[in-house]
Image: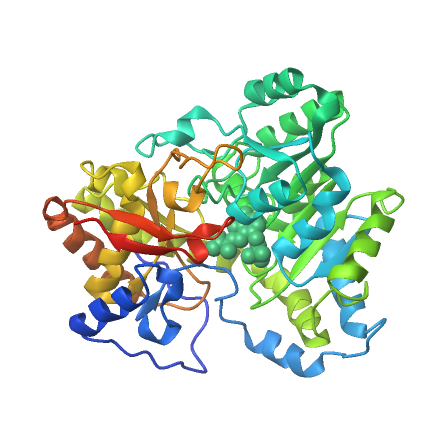
Length: 462
Ligand code: F0G
């Protein structure tokens, strides 16, 4: 059933021209890119949905903040403005800016993890999993089983399976668990939200076994929006109140600010208790890897834009419009019988490529097949979230089979219009129409040892 597009709560002041290549040009560009969408030039993509990370449009206030940025090496006013905003929203005692989310992981994880240790999450995002492994530990996902069925429409499909969490802790031994991470929203499961009840129950398990509980906060505001919309008792609360309650249950967080904080670059670590001995270690690692504690790898202007973006990200009108865009696209796919991770999540539509190409096995990467076809069809760049991204087992080096084979259309914030969304829907429907004629997928002909999907070379299997 068609739904109404939620109109933009802004108008456009500055424009960035786009160009559309011909189909022949796109076919040759993707061949030259060795069928890896990360190897395409941005200017060769008409609608770039590779990620919603750092690709957002900043507001006039944020651009004005860029000019006000204080570039003092230590103790810049922009730093204090950021600490004040973060304290107001998250109510923690210590914050460390870092240049992006994975920098926060690199600084924090080695303090809590090492060889023989495990980290447990509802679902680790790829870079987060990589930092668990780089710290010498192993990552275990405990998302609820319902998340693994894209056609199953239930709220809070990103939740932790509390029983599985507890079973994993006792099986591996609580002394071997270095960290429990709640990813909000659950990106790898389709931007699916986690309920307040589930955050609270996870926190209780962590307390019982005295395990540190961290939030991977990349999409904290979208998660709060879903709690407000779908969880009993929250419909009259503000997003800020809900965010405060979410974070009150955890001990710490790492955040990629390139998503919900609507900046092009930035990240944050938060530690609830400023007296926690971890704080000193975070500062020491930060100085070694990122820079002095009052800038953490960012320019003063970035700190200033982030301080403003944190508030814009929790604005209810902004969130209603944003989630509305994703729902608009999902409704068009419903009408056309295209399967996706449903109900649709926060930051994009995760099309179920395994359902569209049932004849293409996981080790020929159906999500990549759909991604390449969408590029050829309309110059749309997506990313694969499936077996290609998951890669090989770090111990046996064998290709792992992911729970899903998705092509993700991640939606940058405040960037694309209703007409672009119509083109996205038309392109997906066109590829579905010729899906049976695409017989085989891809093989990897070169790959690096870790995070291969960013760099690997592929070739079509004839
Ligand atoms: N955690 C989650 C849940 C993420 O989605 C990401 C990045 C990170 C951590 C790492 O943050 O990129 O700032 O270093 N996700 C992007 C994406 C790249 O496309 O989903 P980062």
